[in-house]
Amino acid sequence: MGVWARYPLAVAPAMGHNFYFAFVVAGPVASGGFGCSWQVTLGANCVAGLAFLALSLLGLRERLIEAIPPSLQHAIAAGIGFFLALVGFEWGGLIRAAPGTLVALGGTLLTAALLARRSRGAILVGTLATAVVAVLAGLVRWEGLVARPPSLAPTFGRLDVVGALTPISSRRCSSRGNAPPSTNRRARSDRCTSS
Figure 1 (cartoon, helix red, strand yellow):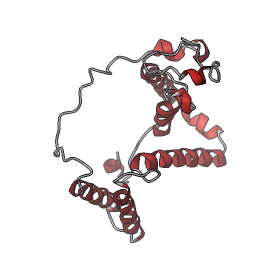
Figure 2 (figure 1 turned 180 degrees about the vertical axis):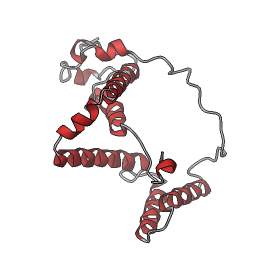
Figure 3 (figure 1 turned 60 degrees about the horizontal axis):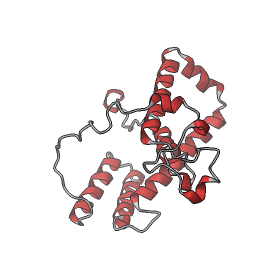
Figure 4 (figure 1 turned 60 degrees about the vertical axis):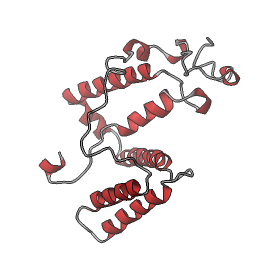
């Protein structure tokens, strides 16, 4: 898409949506999540994707976007951006102690400096330089340029659409790691019934 439009942007549709499902819907109840299984979460993501596709095909998506005031559109984009930045900082080790923190910070500063100098390919150069330093420092294991994709067998077709359409208050928590700890069952009784 970026090559065709000659506009080098990374397109990541609904990444905020995916993070919401991963950290809130499937997140542990102890940390404020709903504690749903990944199968139910995947089913809900599929239902949301189908609804988005239907809205787009019917031309309603544009009408919905136009109905939202511009200030709220910018606020939503900024909120999603801050959330993704927070998750990225946590996973990149900038918020918690991790061996790769200085490498990641150095890569970010290099990219920012190249962007400030209006260097072509600044993001690509910063990303590649960070990757090379991480490999040389032993923080990342080199797997080669081309590799077989992982198997889809463990997850393919395992989404639970019926479970996604079932209200959370009437769903029983799974006993396979998604059930809340006993200390939190009473506090979260509105979300899950005790098993």
